[in-house]
Image (cartoon, rainbow, N blue to C red; front, side, top):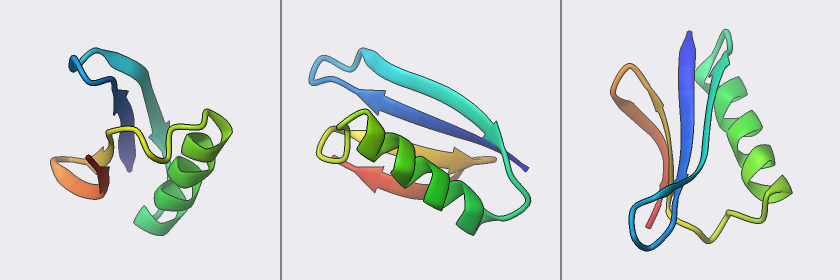
Length: 59
C-alpha cells in the first residue's frame, strides 16, 4: 500500500513530503514516526495518509 508523509510550516508550505510503500498501516506509522523524530518534526504540523485515510496527524 502507498503512504504519504507531509510536514507543514505555519504558512502551509511543505517542509517534508515523502512517499512510501508498506504492507501494513502499522509499518507505515512506525516508519513515519521514526522519520518525524529524525527530522525533529514531532511537534510540527504533519500527517500520514493512505488513500485518504488519516493515520497520523498533529496540528
